[in-house]
Image (cartoon, rainbow, N blue to C red; front, side, top):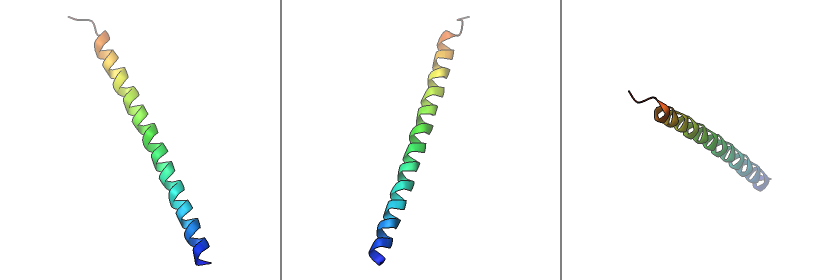
Length: 48
């Protein structure tokens, strides 16, 4: 009985870890896109 509970708990922790990693990757990708957009905006500014 205890063994089965331990396995279930481990699987739940593993799933939460995967969700956190997915959210982290999505956040990182969005940050990169914003940085790229800002970089190109600066590049395309008319030089005065």
